[in-house]
Amino acid sequence: MPEMRITIGGREFEVACQEGEEQFLRSAAQLLDSEASAVISQSGRMPEARMLLMAGLMIADKAAGLEDKLREVEERAMLAERVAANARANPERVEVPVIPDVVTDTLAEIAARAESLAARLEERAG
Image (cartoon, rainbow, N blue to C red; front, top):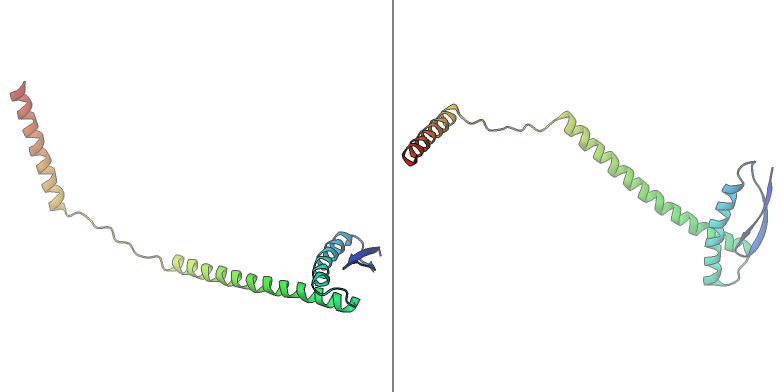
């Protein structure tokens, strides 16, 4: 089991981890060190246990906030999926108006008359 030295809030600690977990431990230590440094800069020197407690609480608070946001996003995604499923199950009926035959027949007759008039005008002009 590998042993590593990590620095948290200016203090060094010897810790052990599972083989292959060294990078994860380094990342976690950096996160904790960042919070511990913030605690120390605001409060000054304090006992090791209190520094670690405060830094841990700050990280836990951030994690809780992220969990709340994740839960909100998951709820929105589930709602969107329910809406989409409902739309697929109950598609909205769209009616397209059909032009009555009498209207199309009348338009065809008007077009024929216009063509006839155009032909007569061409004859007179030519």
